[in-house]
Length: 495
Image 1 (spheres, rainbow, N blue to C red):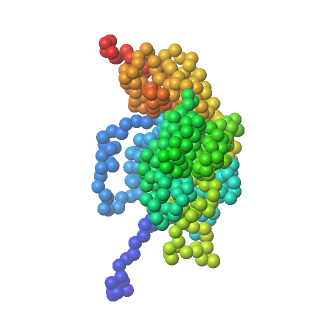
Image 2 (image 1 turned 45 degrees about the vertical axis):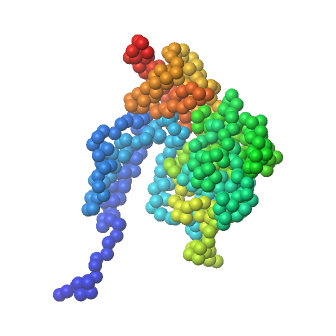
């Protein structure tokens, strides 16, 4: 006898849910157990290692057309992705300025993915939590409750949000309607010559062009020169430009230098400029009891960019843009088509969070930050910031005590620049130290980066890691000296 499906030609419907939840549950427990082991043993593994050819080949395979058992899929992920990480959760990763994640935050990311909420807006718990985390960021930095904010992917986007509001507020016309070509006087933005490269990208994306951003010279401590800034503003006004915004840096990438934010806030007020602070490195020093004074004045900013995935150690990615004038913030981004109109009740009665940024679809970034802050409290994160800054001071002292190492300058916060110096100069010295850096990475000892300070090449250690101990810094000094001597001994005598 024919079945109903056969009679009416009904095709069996499919789903991505498993046919046997018990098997998935068992594998999920294994994944969690493996994840805990992964973090417990992180200190015993290399910081970084090169992938062999067979692992690289996995990522060149074509799209799979047929199914595979979930256990086999996880096995492949374990063998490839989990075994060859970037390394930033390792206690001796000091290369780029990154946080080192935390297990609670990882659970938050997992639960956020399970719930699957879109944070574009709406009346649901995830939306309220998103706003709550933004409010917590305002409280930690001392901005007023009336300020607004939005969670974004990271610092580059957070800076773009703040600078977009600055452009639209200071343009003198409706930029959204008429475009930047209608601005009567070309706008000028100002930052130090140590400013992050994301600000150039922001100027380009805003249609102003790189030349709209004037790089102001810095003093001996690599902080923006206030007198030079004031002179540049006057010069631009006389030339027919419109000074619009000054960007203060709370922690430069190269050395961690912090501009005099109080002086910049005063100057911005006197000159009628928007005051934006790029605090992606150092804004959260505001919660560090021993070092909060270093970012005094950040609470006076018109907008601030910060990164919870750095010193709040949230898993990537989550940044935050805060704007003092909530109305100006919303005016810059809000669009209300008929399919996104609010209703007096129901799902669409909540706030539309996409009105504060460029994304309509937004991931649930808040949960991982919320859970970690609830578990540990903001005060502990502040103490961890102080701990990293103290560790930088300790490392600087160890470097100064080692005759073959040279310190670029005393660290301002948690970034230390130094080099091995056997009596070389110029390109030979750079080549030697670059080789030290690469061997430290390749041998899995530590991950450093390098940079240029005052025209000279240095190795760079950015300590943004809650797992780092002083013994790790002792090891770095010993291994740098060992490798430096080894490499120098291998060099031809003529060089």
